[in-house]
Image 1 (tube, rainbow, N blue to C red):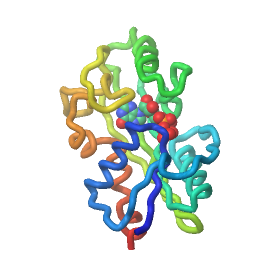
Image 2: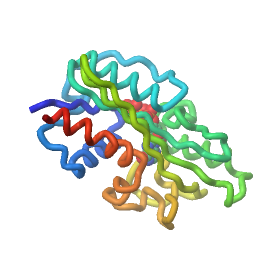
Image 3: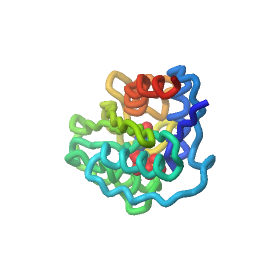
Image 4: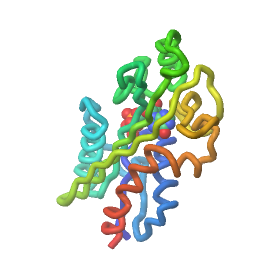
Length: 201
Ligand code: ITT
């Protein structure tokens, strides 16, 4: 069976990527994570856009392992902050992956922004790199607005303060399947489904 590597160090992201692939019914592919392959050096994420970082992560992973690899670069773009934190979402407060500190900082920066200007979008670029073969990069977006208090225990990152368009609940209050059906990551991965089915043969 063809192996497919999901190249992420973020366990919550990995869980969502696996879940979405299962829901898409991608069969004939064995999905493995970074814990299942020998460790390899990864270049720092320095691209100015999500697509560039996702492609760099997938290329590193495919070159190091010889496996087809999917990488996701994602974040939240806040209108009132001119699209920031954007590609810096994971390390906005200065410490990579400190979700609590990142939320606190964004909310402090928005303290004088009126409620009607709290629009934001989650963005996900997903790259699929097949060693010696094709490179595909796709993008999914999920619009909504931010609230000032945290609600919900599902998801990760900025989910507790993000209310998707057409919802009253935050994305941390949605059931996992509801989040996947609407999310930036769900949209991006579903856009790769055709390529993945080709890979499965
Ligand atoms: P990898 O690079 O190893 O995949 P990472 O967590 O460093 O893991 P990113 O650089 O792509 O990944 O940063 C993504 C950040 O954006 C993540 O840490 C969250 O803060 C935020 N984010 C992305 N998708 C999200 C989602 O679905 N819900 C909440 N926050 C999200």
